[in-house]
Image 1 (cartoon, rainbow, N blue to C red):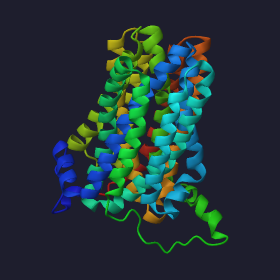
Image 2: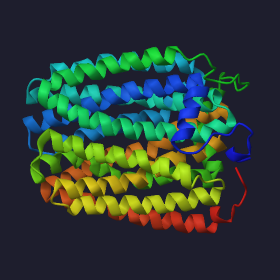
Image 3: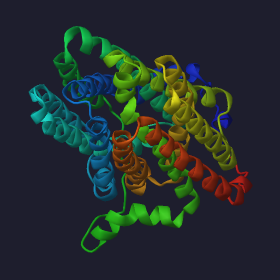
Length: 424
């Protein structure tokens, strides 16, 4: 049944977001947690990238931040994060992860010279692992905290909020770091995680449904790998999930934002924050436009939307790669993330809709693993290419692979999903 078929269905667009936040107290607290913590994340990102560019002009040292921010999360997601999200109290788990991230964020204050950069990378990796447990627990809990007709709007709201906060947080982070110093930005990040934990503690609903799938004896290994088994048995769902991985080959170039800002645009921290702000603006408007104007109702609608938006990712990042000015670079990143925001939102929505609660945490953890692995590993390769030749070649390498993946998944969808006309 489509959302519009419910008697209490939500309006589309911003009105739907507002109505959801007014009607659903638990979703409102999740949203508050997201806004607070992600605002701090962007203060931290801009300040840390600026610090590394101050210490070294090496593009590889800069993209290592991206690698350590996503690769540990991916590796943990392959093994334990979803498993933990399905077998412990999800609410307690996310609160503990927020407190742990607050502690890790404060370690950035100790990085005072190039020889201490290892600590920044280590703290970034630790926060990445915490995030790998936080995100699947929240995503798996969301369908339990929403009514059926609210889930689509709640997902679009999460993506739009992440994007709009990145727009505001990146812009403000650059200003704060430049005017008040990077230490202030690091402290704000730590405080934001404590604010997020407070918001989660206000939630009254159940994060997890009672389950008869007990974890005992020899069943433990099967439970650990059940997410893999589920996706293997549902290849079409796996294909939807992999669209994020295809997008990641282009997205890995994000580690070069500060390289372009400092070495090509000559715009320092402000330029870095503006590129991130353009990314956030595109990722905000993309799902908002799709949710209000083109909200998919059938699997084939999801497939068409994902193919179009993947193509936008390729065009946007390719133009950014060859750009020589900050203005052109911002416009290109904005356009690319109009597509990228939708790739993330609607591929994840399909996985949420089609996965039962007892295994949802493990499947959703795996849902982001491909994206994180490719972003982390390929960002390292892009950094090496940028060091040996020029940043543009690294960016175009990523967009070329995304284009090949787009063609491949398009052929698969044409043979399978395009024939599925059922209303979800």
